[in-house]
Length: 228
Ligand SMILES: [Zn+2]
Ligand SMILES: [Zn+2]
Image (tube, rainbow, N blue to C red):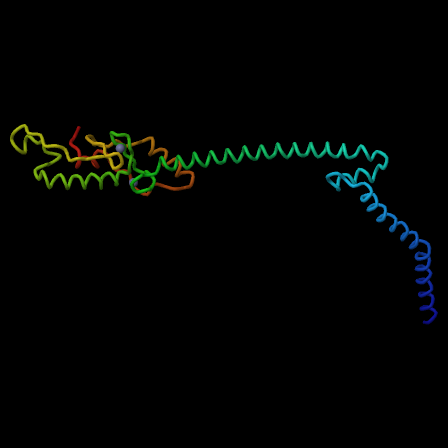
């Protein structure tokens, strides 16, 4: 048993000795030299701008050291140009995104009712050119009609004025006006199909659907305006 341990120790020791005496010293020399030389080169040749790229070039070739800064600056200049191009491209993309956002906001304004701030699902245009929700205009005209009936209790939109009084006396229309510009509204609002389609096209992209059912436009306005 002890013989075995001795032999194992001896072999182990011999192996270690063989390595440490010759190799370890040489390894130490080489390892000491390399780290010393590299920082020495770094310190002796202070790079003008970037340390990383210059070290790689100077470590390979020591003689053309004066050429390297020029090549390095050329590389950096090329890289700067690339970055400037990328910056310009990103700026263009950002500008386009901003334009699209502005256009989207403008579009959103165009399809939004100025009275109720909801989407113009059922838009009707007045003779002045302004467009509002059907329900908003109905409410607006109802108020005007009530006020008018207080002044002209015999007024009936479906009965001609001549039949009411037996003479050709024409009662005035209720003072309907545009909720925004207050221009007189003398005729039935017309369904704004362009805005209607636009609302559905925009809403369709987000999966939004019309909350209200479509109503017959002629029936909606018959209680406010006589048949034309
Ligand atoms: Zn509205
Ligand atoms: Zn108007």
